[in-house]
Amino acid sequence: MSDRPEVSVVVPMFNEEENVEATVERLKGALEPLKCAYEIVLVNDGSTDNTHAVAQAVSEREPNVSFVSYPTNRGRGKAMRVGFAESAGRFLCTTEADLSYGEDIVVRMVSELRNSPDLDMVVASPYMPGGGLAGVPWFRALVSRLGNLVLAVAMAGRLHTVTGMTRAYRRQVLETLELESDGKEIHVEIISKALALGYLVREIPATLRWRTRGKSKFRFRRTASTHLVLTFLERPMMLFGALGFLMLLIGFVLGVDIVVLRFTGSLTAGRPLITLVALLVIGGIQVLSFGLIGTQIAALRRESVKIQRQNRELASQLSRLGLAAGQEGGEPR
Ligand SMILES: Nc1nc2c(ncn2[C@@H]2O[C@H](COP(=O)(O)OP(=O)(O)O)[C@@H](O)[C@H]2O)c(=O)[nH]1
Ligand SMILES: [Mg+2]
Image (tube, rainbow, N blue to C red; front, side, top):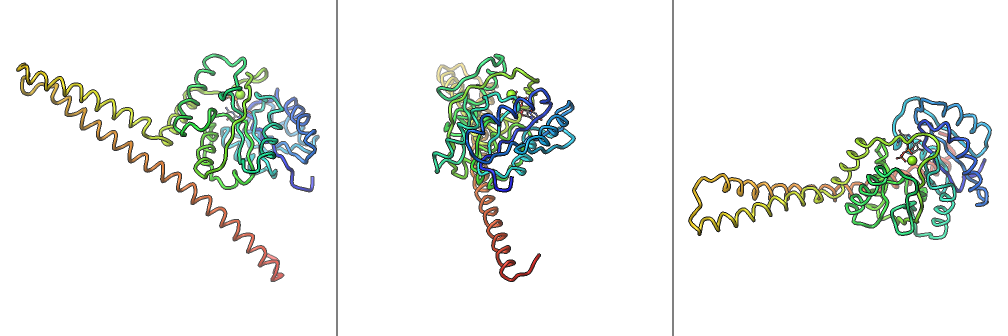
């Protein structure tokens, strides 16, 4: 394909040998009716099964399929970043190798971006009204629902689903974000940074179906810990505010008790209760102060995302100018 594709679909894969062929076929079937140039970018994230061979064969056979691969497993975030760097489309989509949301979701997301020129990013959302989960084991569903609820509050409640990977972006969004996550927390990182930059993000209702082929690579401890850290980085007051307030409240109630004991005459000097009240009040104020400082740091992080974006835009303007000057002077470099 000579001209730039309109749509790139990035599919990160870790041990997905059973899914590669069928997923490419289904995506092709969904993308053809769009009547535009498209590419499917398969990223083999150090699979230990036959994914490499199968994906390579598919990419050699199919003109619209490209394939990137590296030998060790680096995590979903890394795989997505590699896929983004390989993609040339005006719209970039990412979705699961097992097509948990079906193949049509890609077309629905791209249509949404095409029809709304102000919109920068679309998220397939099982947790918004109209969306849902189908056949997902209860523990996974519970963890995911709770996680998204907490993260949504941390992100000022503008979205219902922030951890999902099935999304579509206008190219410029991904070009301006400085992304660093290697794991699946990259999805939260992208939303957090995109919102900080004022990009318009919209959800569309979607149903996530549990995979029928291949195994889920979900690891509870890793996912929970990375996502909890992100929540508190995003909104430190959710931890420090609640804890500090609780300490002050208990300190206050016990303080009232001491005053009552003092006036009923049964307070003995040096009671441990007095020390406890002092500790709770001082500790509570301290923890709240941590929260305030953390909030300032979170605001600074958001500012630095904006500065990173300006730097990237300046750098690309400079390189365009440099290129133009080089062409004018006729000096080949
Ligand atoms: N979990 C995980 N997924 C990866 C990794 N590298 C690529 N992926 C792909 O990310 C997508 C989602 O993975 P899945 O195991 O279904 O995760 P789940 O949806 O959270 O259960 C699939 O396309 C995986 O093949 C990795 O290191 N870990
Ligand atoms: Mg999955």
